[in-house]
Structure formats: structure tokens, C-alpha cells
Length: 625
Image 1: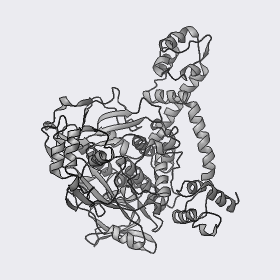
Image 2 (image 1 turned 90 degrees about the horizontal axis):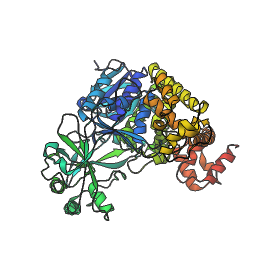
Image 3 (image 1 turned 60 degrees about the vertical axis):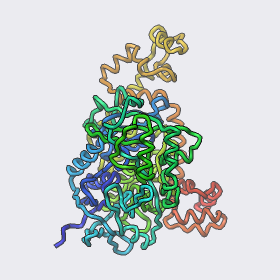
Image 4 (image 1 turned 45 degrees about the horizontal axis):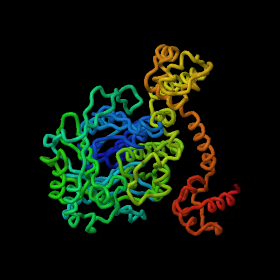
């Protein structure tokens, strides 16, 4: 008798950030879902730094939350510090980040998943997928158990043939203390998939009791912390834990260089590429030889633990070299290690082999999400897991797939970049990758995405109603500024205090508020404004949203117009399996790339590396445009 009586709608393989979001999304949309992982004690483990969000990544977490995912909620419930990064810049650049309690983060994720209807769990290694024709029908485990399913989402992280490096030593593993996963890569390659190898690294973890924080710079959280989730079930922090900052030195660099001949990065044992924007300490010293110091961020791992994460000191150098060098950093003179840093190599599958839904082109019903697609970062993985879980569920329900465009979400930018351009090094999201970042702000993710999440059956009605109420209140407040005039005698004292040109006659408040150096706090000094806020009981989210809409209305409108123009190209669909080799007036490189990637729209085709505007003109002419 089988352990599993029924055929599942969705099986999710791997329970990291991608797998957890995929399983939650599919189950919450009504699909009978199984989450299978090698160790149920490590669900949603923070394998690297204990933090969520950051530049562009914070926007992604808010988008996940707006759609009905769990990452924002768990980030709030397990936060020990909150910071809004880039606050000195425009709102398109504001990025929320929390320092997390690592143990509480994983526990809160597991508790949420266990309370999710339609979701089952199983602990074992998946060694392959089951196929019928060109479609997936389940998975096979290392014990030989076959579990049937209509769709499968692979979120294997760094576990596929993972190899850990510490100096001259290397051993199989998907994470410190955990075994690698085998069998899946070999089967997929046999089926015709291309695979490659990538590398990532992690710093040493140390005992906070052995550090001298008086020699470091205090890094506190925000005075008025916000939160990630748009729901009111989570609350902002009332007290926070500090992080600290210190620096390496020429002495530290010299000590690290002594071990370079024993480093797997420099002696050729590691051949795969690591993340460009999160290099190891030895890579920093080598690439930036002109710099005599680098920042190190000393991050607590939780409220009560003494374990500390040394952000900025990722390394695969021998453990004795790591210890000697770190002991020479100010504040670390008496450091005690919990464990050394290490590098890990793992298999990935170039994401140009996927459709926009994250379903593979070769095998129907099979989805890839997370580091298997060549990305790095919890947030990038979680957003892919969410989208794969949504689309696997929609496929089972025989509904239209769910996709986000580049002008709708950072998630749309991420997926489009991956499947259109591919990646040969771990892909990380930045605000600079999004051409519509003024539209894709962290503050309006609910306006952009909650109606879409509700429509597909993921975001709750409560979430939708809360968003609609916030939108109505902020729109009404903007209209108040447009409709209400202010007299010179009421506003000039405020303007003079800010060195802003005084008014000579009455004018609409909107015009005054739109001045770059005038803030909502300045406007609140006008009695009409403070009375409106009090009478309508406006919260900080509504007030912030109003200020952005007033101050950046011109930029927002201009970007919307640009997005609308490009949407026309998004609407020009290319027939499925179109044969580009027949277009002889198109360059050979363009024909080769287009045949390989098989773009869905003219707009996607135009973003493929090697496809020129002239090639797109040829395609448009052929299609009668």
C-alpha cells in the first residue's frame, strides 16, 4: 500500500524561500499540494545573512505581500530591526529592510505553512521526476517511492550536486551540515536540458560574547520603524537590536593574501562564477587592490542568541587564515568562531529554457523557481516560488496563466530578464534594472498588485478592501490639496523658514506642497491640513502615499505614458513555435537567438541580447505591422 493515497495537484520540491512561497500559494488557491524536503526542521532556513529586503529586494517583498504571499508577514513577525534605505533619495529608491531573528523566521514560516489548508508535508530526497509523454506526472524519491502529481515545482536551491569548499578541503553538501541532492540534474540533462554550475559563499559565524562593540560603530534601526506587510495583523517594532560596523585594514588584507595560494577561488578548484555584487573578501582584495579597507557589518542572529553574522567577510579561505585575519579586525581581537565561512558550488539550469510562467519549455507541468534558475537572494527566490506556485495551480484548474509585465512589478522585471536574457552569474535585483522604477515603488505595491492577487484567488477580500480604503483616502487627500487655497499670511512663515520664495497672493495648496523642499510636516502647520488629517483619521501610509502623489505627479504621469507606449508592443503576439530561420533579411545571430528563446511578444523579442532594432523591423513587416 502506498504512503500517498491520492494524486496531488502540485508537488513542490524543496522548502527554502522559493519552495515555501510556492507551496503556500498553490495550497491557498485551492490546489492539493505536497511540500517535500530533505529536512523538515529547516523549512525557510536563512542560509546566508539573517535579513530580508534591501535595495530593490525590499520592493520585491512588498510585492509578494501585496499578491497574498507570506514573506512580508514573516519578515515583520521575526524582525529585530527595521530600516528604510535610501530615504535621502526619491521614493522610487526607498527600500525597506529588516534584520531578522533567524530561528524565529524559520519557525514562523513553518507555523504559517502548517496552518495552511490543502498542504501536506513529507521529508525525503527527491531523486527524479516521473514522466508520461512530454508531461510530468509526479516525483520519485531516494527510497524509490513514486508520488503522483499533475504539476511539479523544483526549488532545489544550492543542493543539486552541491560541493562545499573551505581552503584545500571540499565535500558534498547543499548547506553546512546538510547533504547534497543527486539524481535530478542527471535526469534533466538526459531529457535535453542545459545545465551549468554557479558558486556562492557565506561568512564565518562568531560568538558575540567574544566581540568588543566599543571599537565598532553603532548601527541602530529607524527612529520610527515601519513594516513590510500591508495587513494590520503585524505591527511595527517598538524596540530594536542594533547592528554594528567595523573595517578591515591593510594588515587584515596581508594576512588574507597569505592564504591565496590555498584558496579554491585562485588555485582553479572553483571554476564557476559567483555573485558579482556580493563578492568574497578575497575577491574584494584582489579586484579592489587600491582600497586599504572594506566595511564589515556585524549582525546579530536574533533577539536572544549570541551568534553573530559577519556581513562582508564571505570567504572560502582555509579556516586558520580566516581566524587569523578576522582576529586583526577592530573589535574581533578575541573572536571565537561558531563555524568558518565557506563557498558552495551547485547546479543550475539557464532560465532561457523557461516560459514567462516559469514552466519549462521541454516538459509540460514542470516549473523551476529560485537558485535553480541562476538567481541569488531570498527575495528573488521567494518571488519566483510565488509565481511558479500560482501558475502550477492555475494550470491544474485549466485557467489562464498569471504573468506580470516589466511596468507592473519588479517580479515582472526579474522573470523577464531571466527568461529573455538568461544569466551566466548569480542574478541579483537592483532598482537600476527596472526602467519603470518610479511606478514600481515599495509604497504602492498593494495598489499595483492586490487586485490581481484577489482576482486569481490568492489575496484575501480583507486585503483588497484595506487597499481600496487606503487608495480612496489618499486620492481624497490629494484632491483636498488641489481644491483648497491657502492665503499668503498662513503659508509664508512656513516658506520663509524653509528659504522658499514667499507667496504674493492666495493659491492652491497643491502648488505649494509640490515644491521640492516643502514636506508634509511643513504643510501640517496650516490648520486646514492638520484638521483634515485629524478628522479623517489618516494613518502614516495614507499620508506618505499622498505626499508622493503630489510631489512626483509629473514624473509618474510621464513614466505611465512611456509604459503605455511599450505596452502596445507587448500586445503584438508572436505565433507559437515561429520559425525565424525563414526571415533571411534578419541577421543570423538574431534568427539563432529568437529560435532558441521563442519570445511571446514583439516587446520581449526586442529585449533579447543580439537582436537589433533592424531585426525587429523585419519581424514587424513580416507580421503585417
